Image 1 (cartoon, rainbow, N blue to C red):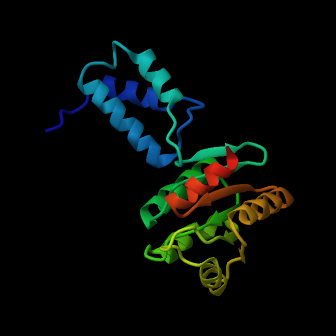
Image 2 (image 1 turned 180 degrees about the vertical axis):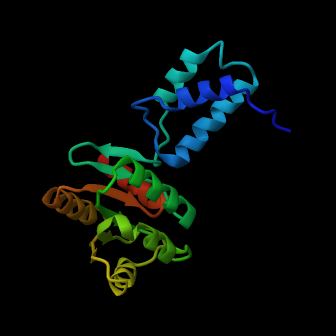
Image 3 (image 1 turned 180 degrees about the horizontal axis):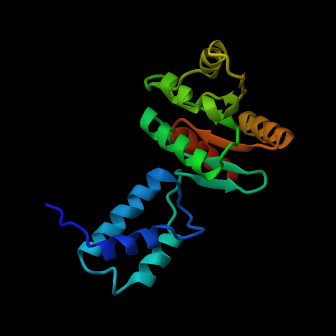
Length: 196
């Protein structure tokens, strides 16, 4: 059974969580950072090694989660591939970039609840660029695009992934908007390889 944290310990944990310029971010990742800090506090490491913990969190990367692939143009990739993951991405984007709209490049698996995933992002979307992930489980880009158009969203089918990235960058630069890529871990792996 978990012990109740002392007020002092909890305050110290909150202080450390709010480290600026960490390489990991978003609400999903904040939960993981909190778990690490809880473990450190439980084992009495917090008071002894606060600076080491602070440095470790500041240098931690979680590939494919709120990962900035490019600053100019701004391209962020997230492996959100189910409604819960997309909701966490939505909340993170809303908190990090209030009142902004985004160009979304998406590719999803046909066996996922992709309609719920996309609907979650509607309030933040300017345009969806739809791509087909290179796997047999993938939903075809034209089917995803058609669903989005039927819901009244702006959506475009991209040819292949490279075409999708090029279109997303061009559209993002034209509109002055950030590019967010999500929908599948397979997809994020392919995208990351193109940015390396």
